[in-house]
Amino acid sequence: MNRTNGSGNPVHPVDIYVGNRIRARRKAAGETLQTVATKLGVAYQQVQKYETGMNRISASRLYEIAQALGTTPAAFFEGMEEGQARA
Image 1 (cartoon, rainbow, N blue to C red):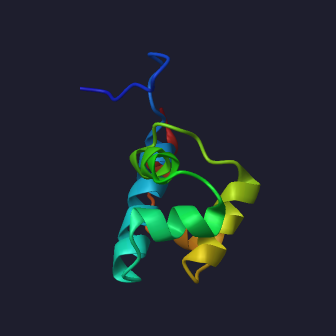
Image 2 (cartoon, rainbow, N blue to C red; image 1 turned 180 degrees about the vertical axis):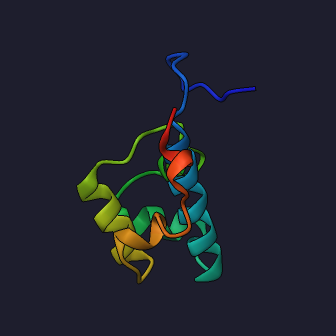
């Protein structure tokens, strides 16, 4: 079953992949949703939506998330295979 966002539109596989990578990095860093949210100046629910792929992440926000987690934006795409980028 395909995931859909709040508008009923399908969530792109890349958004899901990147969100999963963000969650994994956050947990590996020992950070909570709230601590990352505070660093970004957003509600923890917003970070949760990024992690599930429900809300798309702009390039500037991805950069800020990477900074908050002590990594680079490219790290969130590592290991993604070519076929995963197709909707």
